[in-house]
Image 1: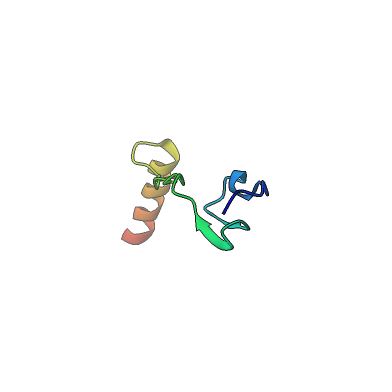
Image 2: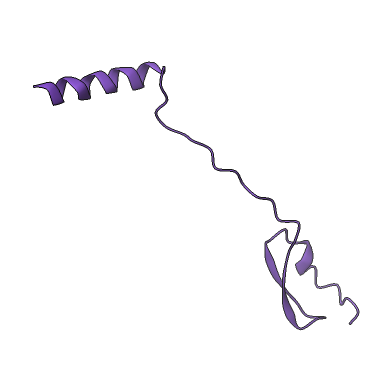
Length: 60
């Protein structure tokens, strides 16, 4: 089971096919992406304007 230098392991993907092992390999060095919140945030000018418009529409 020696490497045949196909360069699949250097593609920086989560899984790849290894011809030497004749099997798929799941990379252990995969990075975990943390979920970040984007969009409206309290205190942002556009958010506050949008929130006030919605509250006026609901009250009427």
